[in-house]
Structure formats: structure tokens, C-alpha cells
Length: 304
Image (cartoon, rainbow, N blue to C red; front, top):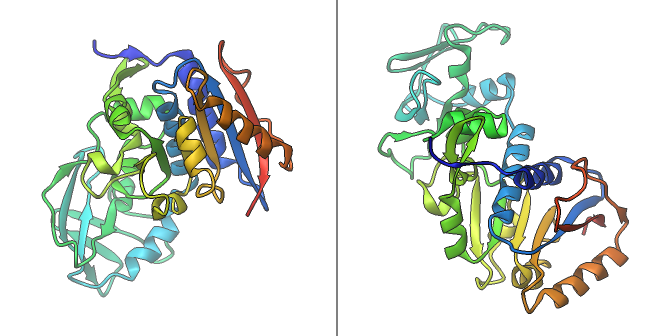
């Protein structure tokens, strides 16, 4: 049996990230500042929570997906997955039958009644059709998820849907070399093994589609547009990431991990306390007390 069980403190970070991504209030934005003895893996566990929380809040319902598909034309390029029977993305052309709302992709046929309420064969499969831009062309078939059981057990989300669609839900700023190594950490959830990357699906380490997060070097160009695009939130791994990037991330919920032994931890702490002093009010995420050795500050900032 491979992988170490997800530690208790990891679940705390995952729950915190999920709160950050889902508790949205008009005119305000959530902030979380965490002080730890060592930063290893903490940022990625928080990002796992952001990705899973953002995914749950952004799933298209059947009606919205049907409307999206109804706008496609015969011959439009699409990618599709059959569901649990075949954990693989395939590519084909969209075929629309004029007399009935039938959607035909080779050996996959989907039928929706005109009232949109009842669907024919394999209702779940209807969700796994996505237009492909003509400029993208066709790609090689690829697996949807290497460890679907782990994703389902650890995050409680649909591994096929989460892996099939592309959406930027979390931006992680830090040392990209360290983050790349941590993504390969193998873990267990209820005895099922998988990797952090199976959940985060970082764009830089996988095909361009089916991604959920991106990483940015804390030394990168501060004008990077990625920081303004995530649906869920931004994780800043380390004091240097926070001091350099906090202004760019101000429109989104953010979480910062501060290593108390880092030389710049004091400057980061002062900046966090300054933000707390001008905040709207303290926040109380439903995650319980921080694990031993970890200190945390949560507050609501004014949406700017």
C-alpha cells in the first residue's frame, strides 16, 4: 500500500481553503494569514481545499449544459468522455439530428426529451461534452484522472467532471521548484492512494486542458495577469510571496503561509497586522482551532 495517510493538520488546511473559496459576501473578501514552524505542503493542502470548494460551487446544471450544447453546429470539434466506463478523453465532431435533440459522438449517443427533464442512456455521460476551439485542433486521447478513487475519497467530488473541464480556480505563488516536488507527494484517503497533483491539476505539469490551478514564481513579473483570473482564490506560499504579490491579489480571497523562521517573516507580520487594523471585521471560518504550533488570523477586507 503506497502513500502516507492525510495527516489531521492537512484536513484543517483543506477545510480552510474550501471556506475561502465558498463563503462569498457582498462588498467584502476573505483573508487568512497562517503562521507555521515550516511551510512544507501547507500551501498545497490549502489550495486543494480552494480547488474542491470552487469546483462544487461552479458545476453547470443540466439545463445550462444543454443550452451550451444547443448552440453547437454539426461538425464542430468537441472532446468527450463516456464517464466511469472509460476514464479517457476522446476527440470527435458534434452531430445534431434535426428532428430530435439527439447528440451523437461516434458510439456515444445522448437523448434529451424536449422538456429538458428526462434524459436517455447514461444521464451522467451527457455532461462530458465540451467544445474545442478550431484553433486548438485535435489532441491525442488522454486519461481524465490517474487516481479517481483518491480524488473522490479525499475531496468528495466527481473525479471525472473535475478532471474533464478546465477552469482556473486557484493560483499558487511561491518557489516553483519546491511546489513541483510537493505536487508529487503520494497520500492515502480511506486506504486509497493518490497525489496532490491529482486534485490540484496544475496547468504547468499536465496537458493544457483539464487543469484547475496554476503556479507563479514569487520572483515572476508582478504584472502577471493570472492573479486576476482565479474563481476560487490565491495562495501565497511564504513571506516573500506575500510582500511582493498581496497588492495584485487584493480582488480575490487570499491565504498566506508564513514560516516564522524566515528572515522576512517580521515584515510580513507587520503588513498582515496593518491589513487587520483596517479590515471590516474578524472572520470566523468553521474549521475549529488551528493545529498545535500553528497561529492564524482571519478577517474580512473591503472589496476594492
